[in-house]
Length: 439
Length: 119
Ligand SMILES: Cc1cc2nc3c(=O)[nH]c(=O)nc-3n(C[C@H](O)[C@H](O)[C@H](O)COP(=O)(O)OP(=O)(O)OC[C@H]3O[C@@H](n4cnc5c(N)ncnc54)[C@H](O)[C@@H]3O)c2cc1C
Image (cartoon, rainbow over the protein chains, first blue to last red):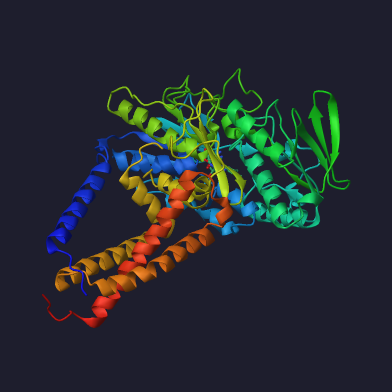
């Protein structure tokens, strides 16, 4: 017996498919905005998430402009990958690529660090002494990890021997941090976690690594031998109240201890004791494993430049940009992208993705003699991994409002597999597309 | 997400698999779909027997696709949380099922050539 399908049905199906394809094509949106002629000299400091993304966007939009990128680091680091490396899920190479691989042709890369920035004279001088005059400056230097601020600590301690984890430092240190975590979850003991009192990149990362550690201990059948303590610097576990409550609930459910207003002051690797500053004075805590996330500040060259806020974050030196336009408040030809910005939120790669079109818009508008119109609303996002295989896609803005990308589909405060998929497989491709100026 | 468009989506997929592999996979999918349409048009009918064999392959395609995705993403079935997770998982299963059935149908048809003409 043969079941016959009328050919016309197939044809109609085919037409339907074609129509669907056309509809999809329409989704692609308008083609890239027209190229703009300009002879402006634009210097971009830093070729990280923000700097590389900006270089590509400007190269695609401008004709004749002289774009110079300054960054002394030959390696580009995909930092959101550090968490996966420190959890034993990826090798160091996962987060490493070449800085030069991301820079478009037609852009000059000065492989050196800015040593001096003079916004009065519109000039940057590199460590090597090269002088770069600019018409527009884009500061995208990211931030500096102040390891020395923690007494007794040294990156040499990182690894299983001393039970020290410091996955913020680099891909290699993230691997050593994994070996420390692996040993701790094998043998048991007390694990200390926490965050610094300064602003920091990816404020969820210290929480993530602890929840992952707890999950790994559970999978190994060693949960009852491990104690987990989270030391928050403030009177909450996360700066956004609704997220704080959710994180507290998860920690309660999983019998994770937490303390408020505990800031790591020093470690004594010999005695394996950490000292915290608390409102009641100093408090010592013995540990078998400690994850250290140090205070974070603007690079020295930026702090010395006069671009920082004079009356806010004075111990940290973030630059004084307008919260919405990311244009410098005192030097209108200077913009900031990424972690360096002195704005209340937004030290994540996801925020960089939203910074880029805003700065591009205002800069190009100015070159065309117009006013830019786009603004940044504080968008910050951090896929908060709660266990290997699950995460919460928390996204919020300046006003502590949740700003879900997929409202009604991906619930922000629910532990979901899809949110894990986004962090595990979709985030790096999205990040790479952002570097190329395509997302 | 900001400026979420088909172009962004394609860029993300290109980064995920590498541009070559991604477009090669798309090409394979397109080739099999076209081949399927071709045999349908050539044979002027959907052969019920081939369709049946293809259908039998569907559960295998579904299970294989789900197992593969869980393996690649370091996940387990217990990680499935809310409704959207189930939908995504069902989507993966459906893609695996339909994909494999098309492949099986096409291979049978091409392997045996055109059937004798029938009423
Ligand atoms: C462990 C960890 C986990 C994270 N997880 C996430 C996450 O899940 N999601 C997320 O969105 N974000 C996450 N982030 C944050 C994200 O990586 C950063 O917010 C993002 O990289 C910021 O981009 P940027 O361009 O400002 O700085 P960077 O990407 O750090 O780049 C700064 C660049 O500037 C260069 N530079 C420094 N000083 C100078 C100088 N004086 N002159 C010239 N160049 C200089 C540096 O060499 C560097 O290449 C995480 C970060 C860490 C450490």
